[in-house]
Image (cartoon, rainbow, N blue to C red; front, side, top):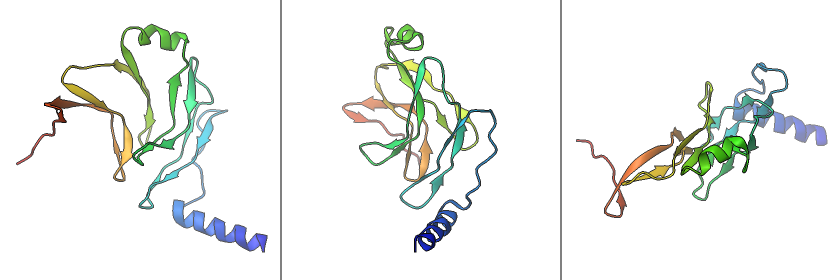
Length: 147
């Protein structure tokens, strides 16, 4: 009975992810990050990441408070050289992400920008949204209107 359940689970995984094959590891010691299913069944592809990054820790992927998928990313270790040189100058860490083809590294961004609010990068409505500044006027986020 257990064997039948395992076979069925394997078949379902193949149907869901399309394949159980993992791309070749690019660097010895890299860690595989599993694909993640979105609510509509679309799978965000898995990828290889380095096992460590000096001055940073790995934050596992998670759903945010609005149900948007925040992929795994590197965060600066509090009090490390990678953190202290920027955090005191009003800079905020914007995490890196995998865009389906390559790793886009994180970066320090200004903590504030008058007249704008920062939208964190995330998967929403089954597509990737890059982090960006959005104009903010009169208490409401400004949205460009197209003809």
